[in-house]
Image 1: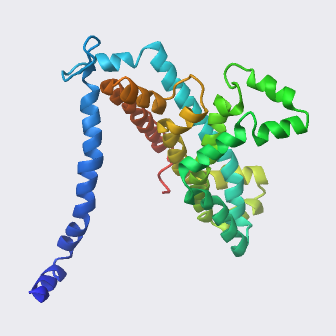
Image 2 (image 1 turned 180 degrees about the vertical axis):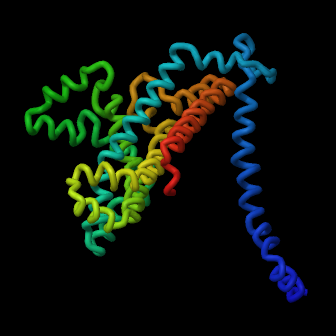
Image 3 (image 1 turned 135 degrees about the vertical axis):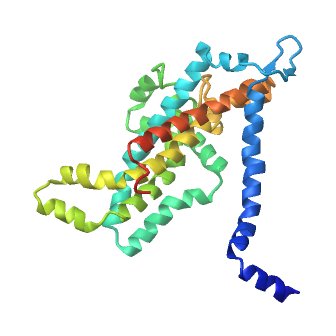
Length: 301
């Protein structure tokens, strides 16, 4: 019996492939796409202000609330934070990735890989809470500022309305620093992989033709490594858009999308508005991917 079944499957490789792909595809469709569809359906319902119950009637009044000034500020604040985190990760990751790809010896490259990936082996919550201690008013950053007599500069910076707060651990700057730390490995690895694929002969040919280092970087290295930058930015940008733990622990009273979704769904029970809010990052990422595709970022992937 088993021999017949194995012979039957051996003669039909497409059927074997379909059987292998069926379980993960079924899981993807039912769990992932099913959850997104359920969320989309709930976003068209609304919360009755008198009874506090969700009314399952198709309406656009919930989406209309997204265009209120407060909610638009939440989208703008979150998108700006995601963009700044992405740019900072690119600025830090590119030089390190280039050194790993071009100059590091095999042994040093192994150690640098470990240095980049080891934080990913630990708990996300533990890493976030460790930064809570580092940036606290009694933490090492404030202690070092007092040691070098820069506590006045730190106090002046924390007094700025947009970026400051009672301490670095309760400020937009703290949110930014922790986001950069948490998502930086997701930027380093794609850029380093893309730089590994850049032929050394092209760099040498650029130099032979008289191009200086800046011209070689701008016209040769960056265009060929750009798909890696886009791949990393997809991680850093999208993960920042939806994260609610970091803004909850380090942020002030200003809401971000993830924090707003948690508040609307968990505190006030306004599931339709929470679902409508979650559609915002999806739309933002779709627009971002369309722009990246227009720029040709996926051509070399």
